[in-house]
Image (tube, rainbow, N blue to C red):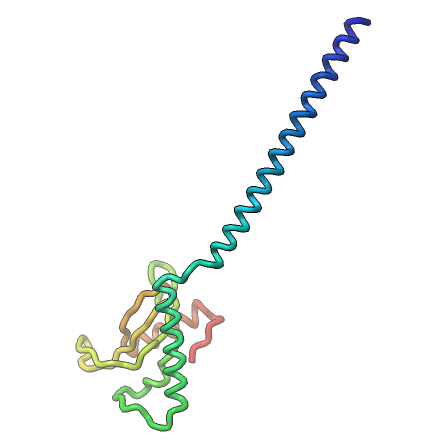
Length: 159
């Protein structure tokens, strides 16, 4: 019987140690969870304070300009003197360019300008993409860009 009593005492002692270890681990777990929650809260605050980079600002300015230009052209009583047959209808038009297996959305931001190149004296429109990239497109490229936009971004409506 003495042997059983010794083992019982030893088991009780081990059980007490295990209970203390569990309490310590639970306490550490609670501390880690608290720290994790604090980090998440700080991270959420920091993401709210993030300043837009130059590309985002440029794109937002381009969008605002295209909207104001489109408004001006539709509300103006005077017709602009541009040789191209449809400059007003393309301003603010949503387009997209298919590149490296992905479609990149953009918008027509300025009236056509004459540019000497393959089509001598043909009008070219300035395009700004959401990633900040800028390009000059002729009428054919704008029409193709409208089709790509419709095909890959069905939720976006072109003018």
